[in-house]
Structure formats: C-alpha cells, structure tokens
Amino acid sequence: MENSNLKGRILMDVENLISRSCTDQTNTLNFKRLHIALLKKYYNAADVSIDYYRHRVKMDIVIDDKQYNPKTANVNLPVVHANLFFKNLKEFLKSCIDKDSKSLGFYATLLRSFTQQEVKLSIA
Image (cartoon, rainbow, N blue to C red; front, side, top):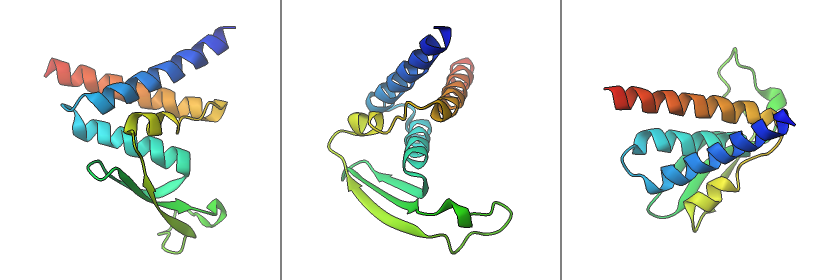
C-alpha cells in the first residue's frame, strides 16, 4: 500500500513540476533542461532541441541500443530524426510520463535535483 502511495506521489509531483515549468518563465534554463531530460527519457533520444516559439521538438531517436558503447565515441548509432509539433507544451510533456517502475527512479532523481536547485536559488 505504501509503495502505491509513493508511486502516485512521485507521478503527481512530476506533473506539478511540469505545470510550473510551463507557466513560470523565471527559471527558463533549468526548466528547459527538465523538458529535454523528460523527452530524452521517453523517446530514447540522443539529441533534443525545443523551439518554444514554433511549437516544435527536433530530436534524434536511437533505434538500436545494442550498438551503444559508453567507452567509445558513438558516431554510427542508428537514429531517426524526428520533428514533432505540439499544441500545448504542458500536455505534451505530461503525455511523456511513463508510469512503470523503472521510470519512477528517474523521476525521483529528477525531482530531488530540482528541489535542491530551488533551495540553492532561494538561499542565494
């Protein structure tokens, strides 16, 4: 029961962070990093760029992870270039939230890093 409650709270906190990141324009660099991290995780993308004005996301989606080697420069990874259009950034990012157990650890780490950054910013 406690595990289910924790899962729900993590997912709710991620959704709240996404909502805040799409309405608050003061922390744009940190929130831009959040958006990119969420998209990289969901799409398994190697490179992501967001054009907030034209409502476009451009990314290189890795097709086959088997050829990835963290010890070498990966210049020949099979990727597909995607250029996606979104109407509402908040809804688009919320649709990229995976509810599986493997993703919960990623989201918890993401939340922890953002709450620590916010504490540092408010102290300074």
